[in-house]
Image (cartoon, rainbow, N blue to C red; front, side, top):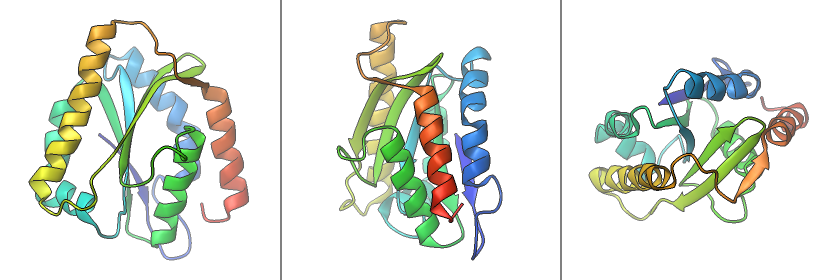
Length: 183
């Protein structure tokens, strides 16, 4: 799992949005090249409270998902100790950049593959925000991760039909960070 940190009262600190955007392509390429991942996913959720945050922290969720994803997936997630508006902005911009903002909203998980200049096999799942039992939320996420991995194994190395240009994704994210004033 790969943490993107946003902290502080007035601006993002740590990795921050701009640093993450600058490193995103490199992270994906390195993980694929070094056999650390065949695909990627973002977990979008409310970092300040809510059932997904509680589940990931209290039900060994991070450990379970890290073990489940293994060398098949790198799971990106945001950790924010700062203002909730940073987290919401991050979620909104990445969902929009991946082109799924009209299909799903947090809490959700979005899977994809990075293949050269393309983002492919985009698959998103809403996470049940009504479930309050941490172990059930973690199990739901684990099932989504296993389902995507099983789908990749059935497909082999064939790319899916859903894709966007990686350059377009990165350009959108960089432009959004310039105009947002938050990151």
